[in-house]
Image 1 (cartoon, one colour):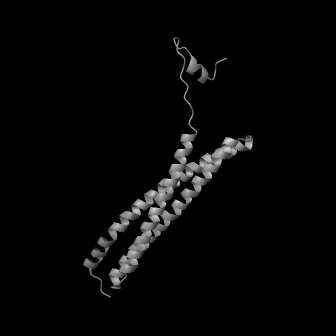
Image 2 (spheres, rainbow, N blue to C red):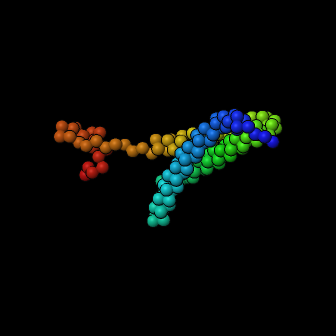
Image 3 (tube, rainbow, N blue to C red):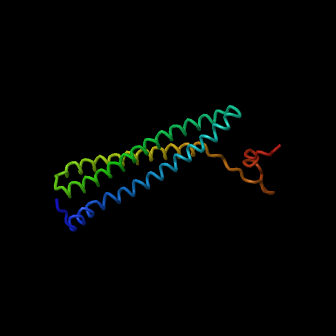
Amino acid sequence: MNIQLGDIGHTIQLAIAPVFLLTGVSTMLVVLTNRLARIIDRSRALEDRLDVGYNENYLNELDILYKRSHLINVAIALSTACGLLVCIVIALLFVGDTTNVALDKYVAGLFVIAMGTLIGSFVYLLREIFIASSFMLSHRHVRHTPRTAGDTGTASAVLSPNKE
């Protein structure tokens, strides 16, 4: 087998697009692992608070955090599978081009599967974001406004926590 320098250049050109995709997938993995780390930190803090005393609100939040962590874990698994498949695609491109073996159907099939896993990863991330956002919105607090001298006090008096 005699590989020419031009052949290697052509093979590298073929592999450039999947390598850029691999960079995007690795960025996605960084985002997912950061979100998972935040979820883990928050759940540890809540579990420590529950060790001190029982609180139904903490238990409800922990349930939401467990759901979110499950979704993020699935998204991480799908992104990792996508990265692995893209690496296999790149390897097959080199092997197929250097050995003149027709691997185009395998490359195309693996690339489609890789895109499916990436799409799945984004879907799970989006589901986790929706759960986090809806939980945050459902637990927002009413902001208290300070009373002014000319205020009649009806709304502020009801909202003011220090009124005696």
